[in-house]
Length: 512
Image 1 (cartoon, rainbow, N blue to C red):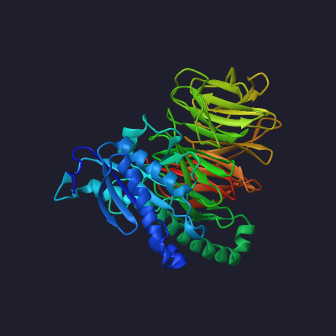
Image 2 (tube, one colour; image 1 turned 90 degrees about the vertical axis):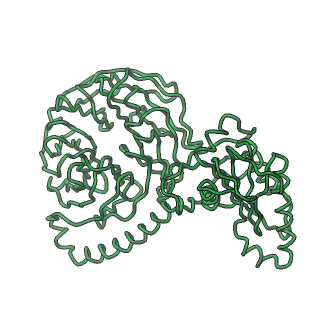
Image 3 (cartoon, rainbow, N blue to C red; image 1 turned 45 degrees about the vertical axis):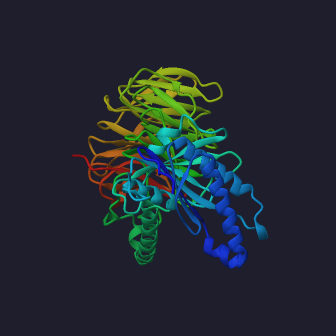
C-alpha cells in the first residue's frame, strides 16, 4: 500500500443507505450495482488525491492530505452517483462524512479519536447527504467548488463522543438538499421524550376528563410537571396543561416566535436562530447570525431578529434560511426587541428609541418611548412598549411613532401581549400581571403570578406567563382575572409564544 498521508488529514467515510433493501430488490444484480458504486467513489477519490484506507462491502474509508480535495471528491462522487443510470430504476444513495484531524499512523492504518469521530459523522447522515465537522468546515469554506454552499446544522451529540460536535451539510446545486433529522443522540433522545410525553399527555387527558367540574369552576391550583432541561424548547398542550414535547436548540435561548410553518428561537450564547418544524417538532435548521439575537418576530413573509447589542434588525429569508443585510436602527444598546404589525416591523431598544421599519425599502422612522424598553407588541391600532426602568407602558401612534399615553404598571415590566380586548403586562420585580383595557388605557386588574415573570403570551382563550425565578408557567383565565393553573417546569423559562396548536417556551439554566 502507498504511504498514508500524515500530519493534518481529512477523512471521508461513505456508506450506501438501504443496502439490504437494494439486495432484496435487485437479487443477483446487486453485485453489479455494488461494483459500479465502488468504481464511482474510487474514481472521484483518486482524481482528488485520496488514499483508500479500507473498504468493506458498501463502505469506504479514504484519507486526503487536504480538506478541500476531500470535499471536492465527495461532491464529485455524489453528482456521479445521482446521474448514473442504475438498473431497475433504483437510486443508489450514499451517506458521507468528513472530519479533519492529526491522527497517529500505525501499520497501514490510522489510530486516534479523529477516525472514530469521522465514522460517527458519516453514520449520522442520510443517503445523498454530506456532513462536515466544524474543523473541516473551517478549512474548506473559503475554497468551495462552484455550485456548493454550506448549511449549519448546529451542535450535535454523536455516539461515544464526549462533547457535542457542530455539524454542517453541503448543499450541492442540482442535488437533493432536504433530509430527515440526523441520526444523532440528541435527536433520538428527543424522539424518546416525545413518546414519553405523549403517553403522559394521554394519561393527563383521561384524568382531566374525570376532573372536568373542577376545571370548569376555574379553581386550578399548583400542579406537578415535567422538568425541562436548559437549552430546550418545550411544547405545552393547552388542553391538558402539560408538556408534550421538547426540542433541543442553541445555547441560552431567549426569544421565540411562531409563523411560516415553523417555530423560531433566538439563541444568545452561540448567536444562532433555530428553526423548528411546527408540525413534526424537528429541528430543521440552525441559522448562524452575525450578532447576538435579543428578540425575534415573524410576519410580512420573513423572520425579524433584533440585535440589541449593536442596535440592528436582521431580516431572515424563510425560503433560503439566509440572514440579509442588517438594518441599522439605533446605537449600541444593552437590549432589543421586535414585533410585526400595522404593515411594518417595530424594534425597541434599551436606548429608549423605537424604530418603524418599512419592509419594502428598509426605511427606518424613529420615535422615543420610555426608559429602557424591554418588550413591544402591535395591535388595537397602537404600538405598545414596555419600559423596564420607569415601570410604564408607552402607547404609541403607529403613524407618527410618538407616545399617545404613558401607562403606569408594575415594577420592571418584562413582556406585553394583546388579547381579549386587553393589554397584558408581566412585571418581573413584583411578580404580577397588569391587565389594561386598550380602549381606555386604564388598569382593569393586577394579578399575582409566579416569581420573576419574564415573558407573556395570549392564545387559546388564556394568558400564559413564563416565571423565570421559580420555574413555572402560569395560565390566567381572563374571565376571572385569576391564575387557573400553574405548571411546574423547572430551570428558567425565558420566552413564550402561542401558535401551531400549543404554547412554546424556551428554557435557560437557573439563575445563580
